[in-house]
Length: 341
Ligand SMILES: Cc1cc2nc3c(=O)[nH]c(=O)nc-3n(C[C@H](O)[C@H](O)[C@H](O)COP(=O)(O)O)c2cc1C
Image (cartoon, rainbow, N blue to C red; front, side, top):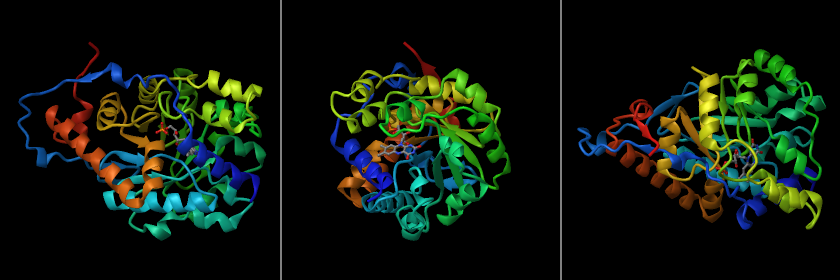
């Protein structure tokens, strides 16, 4: 097994077995949606459907970027994709870097083979890979080989700095991303991996013709902490992973910065989205949709059916919240008043 495959399995194991939360609040709990005891709509008429990147979803929810690249990861991806397709939600893949030196690993990412009806599929690559010679041809084949609709460039300096074998050469990435995003024939989006997008970062990324951005703020899975577990115990990286587990921009702020600077472009709220209420607040703060990662993995680890049930329950909760705020659809949910006291 290559180092890349081993790392994928380490990430899955640690995320399923260890305490990997950031221990910091997402900030979403600081807001209350204005309740409406006289909504004047029927619960059954609430319409959760949205258009995202030109695709129709049954609700504004994506399964966040997680995995691929090992046998176990491939099995998780297939379970998740089938569950997401049944419920009518979108899905993102984990970093496809392993596919470049090992084209035979395509199968572990090719979720459309297992779930041809998946309404939206987004590929994923670390932006820092552009510094290692990744070019237009490789980026295009990452998307085409798995029939994805779009590509995420993930930005993860904190994770890379703590990862024992991490890539920390971020100089010049903004210009490189701008060049590729402009030239690639499919929509590209930027994302963090759980340390969030600050105002400073949002401003810089807004200058690149990304189709959208995913907030991935602090409050959910901490990748500083995950990498800390992979480092030898008592090592500086292990200690740093624990100490910096809450470092970054909380999800609520991250969503607001993304919305402010990406005005009409697609904004996906993520990082610690766990409940229908989190989804509703993220949307009222300006997200077009949300992405949920680790809880979906935990459900898929049990079974495909458990994953489908988890997603179905989330949709039901979101529908109840829309009903009780008088929002007949997601557009109206965006306009529900948020109270801070
Ligand atoms: C097992 C696992 C693997 C992940 N791998 C990737 C990855 O390869 N690329 C990426 O952009 N984000 C990756 N992420 C980060 C998630 O997409 C997300 O940004 C982060 O976990 C916060 O969301 P959560 O709190 O819902 O887990 C991964 C998350 C998990 C749980």
